[in-house]
Image 1: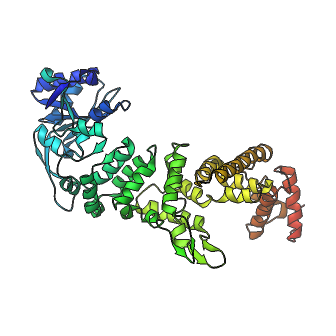
Image 2 (image 1 turned 120 degrees about the horizontal axis):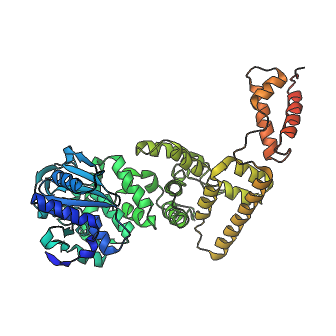
Image 3 (image 1 turned 180 degrees about the horizontal axis):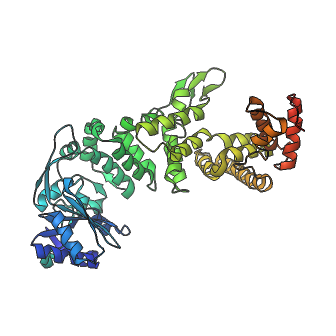
Length: 475
């Protein structure tokens, strides 16, 4: 279906080169998918471009590379029948038009050559099935067999075929529907939504790595809660993040309730997303309260408690990352640390920010003190304007105190000025418990402000402590 020409969309010289190559091979070629969608949505510059050839995508890629400057390389992925050409401005992925059929237990299709129409049928959503023709005669024509333009205008996520077919064939598309809805601020079409609910269990055949890729994209949206609410409403969330759905609900005992920690968590994630693009800090916000479900207790004296939920939550982070095959490196450790320390700045406020409490906070948080404060401020979700203002003012006081203490005492990541080797030498010791005790005592004295963070004072304190432990100095 031709609806006028959009020459300006494909004005970049690379499209003329593809057109030339297609004409030379006598095949039809089209730009399809995200590039076309984002042109109409006016969404920045698309670097990844999908080119469909009615014929061999690999041959077309090779011909395009021939016509481009000599340094252009082609990466061929024979198994998938695709090829990639990188230019200065774009990554072009070439594929032959395909017809696909699926078996129940795999998202890997049986593929045959097909027409452009077959290829558009196998696309996930109508807004991703639009194509621009690159043939010299029809250059720039829009082919939109499923009224993707209409759905773009209505801001709707809809499948080209019967949704049960689209989602059951490749269940990852259910995650993609949620992700596009969150990214573009679109609504999932009702029929599609119901279909995702019916097919949610099919997500089990998708690898964790692919699920996590979509979760990261949802997490990096302007308002991540939109995506997580949809994941919960469609019934997808418990299959990969049961720790979050476990937070849902409010229990009442003897007229006492607690807040719904699931919705609270989503508010915290949205709050933090206004202040940071850091993916892992956003993950920390999402997981900061997961320890509350297993630590929830009720007692007549104090009502609902969640004692030690930060410590429990930080342990759960490891298991969650491991299960989802997320990195178990410094990124995971960072999220663990943020979850473990998530209540510490609030405790400092309760102690009216004494120097020693702030020193300990700065020392323990190290280079992540800023991130920790950002997380704690995002955790303020009270709807009471007076309280909201009071909490923020308190945090500002702590922030000011952190700057003051850090400038004066330099305790961020500090190591006691006296080393273990020096303690061993001074008291003629072999490795033993006393060395650790002396080191810990020096560190505590500096953090508590008993002695300054300086070598002379620390050495003097070491000698005194050694004497208390009955140790003899050498010489």
